[in-house]
Image 1: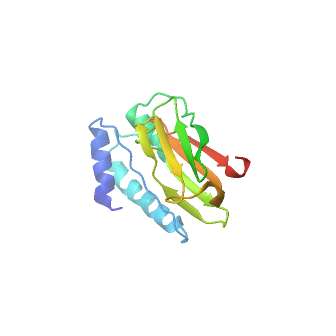
Image 2 (image 1 turned 120 degrees about the horizontal axis):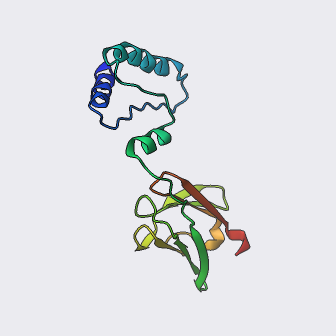
Length: 167
């Protein structure tokens, strides 16, 4: 992030535009120098915009506030697993609240302990999906669990995990 980025955010805020200036860091290094650098940039630019008030916030709360989002119920993610032949099963997932994005995240944990992700077949965008478990993907016997996660438009995350050993 550079001073011009911070200056742009303050300029837009002074024009009554909804602004979120965000910074992230997610590796193994000490993040303090990067965060202190951003704080120094803000401290350098803020006096040029005395009419602009700002707050430090978690990114999700900042976006909700900037966009004026109203609370929305979390996705329900009802999961049904059915056997369709001797060697295949179908996982169906449905929600009563539209997801943010056309499909949820699908995570597969094998009995060997490895993790994989894949895409669903979309039956109804934002509402209903299915995934076939067979020799082309993963047979059910090869899986320990299946995880499904989705967000609603408010940013609330729902995660469901199906223990395949119980099926």
